[in-house]
Length: 404
Image (cartoon, rainbow, N blue to C red; front, side, top):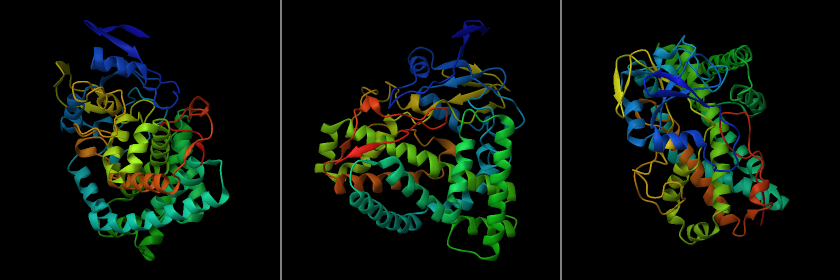
């Protein structure tokens, strides 16, 4: 649906994403990418409308331009996909440099090369143990809930220092925060609970430190390097991405590989191609229902020939940028050997995903384990019988039944 223009020649497009199966691309942003790459949209919640930017170079510009602020969104009921704001005020997701730079610097060692190498070895051993249990149980199996989900939860819990006994409670909070049906009041209640949990965990880790991120952040708080709200925001952001985003992305990757057998067969023959294949899968998969965090212009900014005026809100849509035909050859086609421009699945600029290396490592380990340990792996039902998640921020299969 479109509404009358608020500027001459500029209509406002109503965008309320509906659940889509598999890797079917949302039709509105796909159309806007080709016809109106800087467009006005009105989302299901909040007030007014915002700009939506879909073209690759324009998305990079908006993501990196310091005149487009995350901090300026605080206190504004900007049109949005969910009734409640996922990222808390004062947290890393709604901070600009220099505060954002300070916060990211605190967690940089956690995702450094040495730490990731050690974590990769541990993840490989854990993946092999999960795969062995799956093999022993026998087919059919739901890989999303018996392999990908538990493995991703274990990795992020150990990285942060969340006790395994608390994971069920954290998973309940995750489901509430990421649901499009959660009201503003309910969302605030969930955020209060999870904030209290991580504040308590940080106090415990300050007294009893371990080799984990919450212990490091708790130590930084003791010296004034980070506030409690900032610590909680960082922990929540990494937990949600580790529990939900990785589970859905990797499960969808497996689905894509099993529905593209010819390309997957070549990948099995040459496992060295896996890192490039993971990048192509990240580019190809539409990971979200709708957009994430907006920005607000602190000055007039020209984007794609359109002036975004001071005070106006703007969203970027990374999945559309990853399908830009001016950047990728046949962008709507999966090509596991593709070697073109870097994808934007993890974002761009200052807010590039802090856990990108972790997510990539987990994807490589899980896919390697499945491709080598299950040579006859295939879907246990026709692709059109796979149920896909509805009413939540991140797209992914409800279940991924496979056999071998």
